[in-house]
Image (tube, rainbow, N blue to C red; front, side):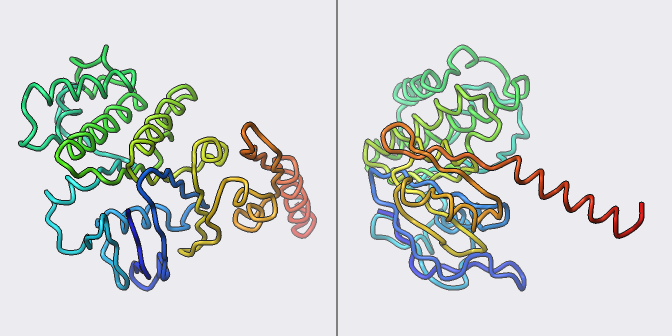
Length: 277
């Protein structure tokens, strides 16, 4: 289990997270949503031990993340950053196996890597240099690296948590579903999974719980049907929404694009009238 207690993070004079309490249980897929600047990536960094806390503590499997070595952290949790960097022309298979610990035998490492690449529809690319791939394909290779690392940690009795920061942002719809199915696959095997998403409908389709973040505070935390209401989303995002019943009691969320454009048009007309242009 992952547990954050009274977590605060400050960037200069700005409090990016303010006294956040959050639990992610093993076997649970938790998605955090919210506007730009709400603190989603900062929360993920705090939960992974990659952000300096000014208050509070984060524990994974009963052990505080503070003071753990990078090697211990790598065995305990796997993290896909929002924009992973690559400066070396690895092949797909080489990059995917980059996070494997030395305790994993070469034969197991090869089999594990091949399995993950197949599940992410990357096996046919395994010998290609990563820089030759499209942006979406490269992002999936980095996800493969993270999943291989997590699988290796689980084989060594660790691998308790998986963190994905906007893992579907550069992907087509079919591969968005593939990625979220893999996240759910690990959750159902007992891993605590924490995902940052902007797509509210994708979150609704896959999440066990949705956390709505606003200005560094948790505004809502619960099931998709409890959290994704028109009133709550309108308050957080500042535009009108319609939330209608979807499959398996999971809401389908529709932003009111026409109303937003109408408001923009009115503001534009008022500005022209006031300036006489």
